[in-house]
Figure 1 (cartoon, rainbow, N blue to C red):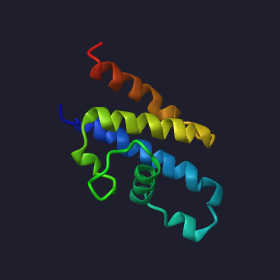
Figure 2: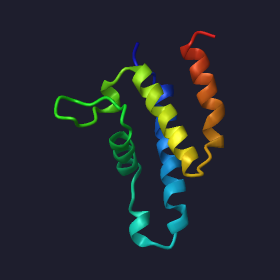
Figure 3: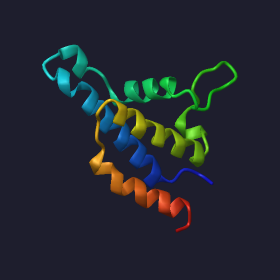
Figure 4: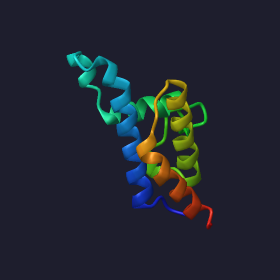
Amino acid sequence: MQITSQHNRFYRALVKEFRNQLVAPHKDDVEAQKVTAQMVKDLLANQNPDYPRDKFGLPISTTKIAPKELNRHIEWIIREGGHRGFTFLSVEEDWQRIMQQANGL
């Protein structure tokens, strides 16, 4: 099964929201505002101990991992954000719908 564009859009929105909540407390810090969604995406892949890696131990691009692996990574991001006090209310409904579709419900 291939990752759908809807699934990919959701992942990008989640990473963007994670980034926004990460830098929000530092809104007046010019350097913090330079943090991009790609930087956060890379950070999250590196921090997730279960994220798929290549033979050199580097995280594999999300475009090259299986949908189930991306789902596990998304769930890890949501949990990790919860540990930091982040809320992803705008994405929670979409995530539940995507998981229902993936499970054929």
